[in-house]
Amino acid sequence: MHEYSIVQTLIGCVEKETREARAQGAVVRRVNLRMGALCGVESELLRLAFETFRERSVCAEAELHISHVDAKWACRSCGLEIVRGPLQCSQCGSPGKLLHGDEMILERIELDVTEATDV
Ligand SMILES: [Zn+2]
Image (cartoon, rainbow, N blue to C red):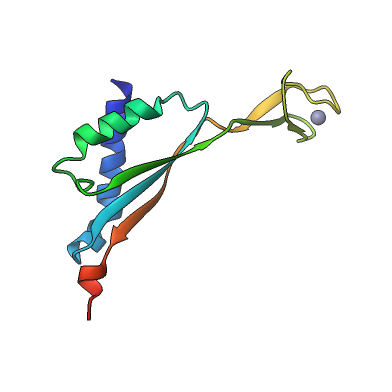
């Protein structure tokens, strides 16, 4: 399944990003993912895949937080934002281009370092 390989990649990223911190005793508590409305990934399936794969991974104690971003379009020539369809600029008539909405970004990883920094 598409979502499974995404989650494997995601966990791989978290693993790499947090390697040093985890060596100091930090624990990954939360993973924030930003998902565009047009990225082609089903967030419920992604959650399910995350639940399946996080066991025995660096994300074993992490919760997955997904924030959704609406698709946004703008005029290809003058840059005017296109609020609703048709996807054509109301000012100059040029076709719209997608500004964002098809992305999936690993936005933030939250670590618990309280034990490591306790005085
Ligand atoms: Zn325009």
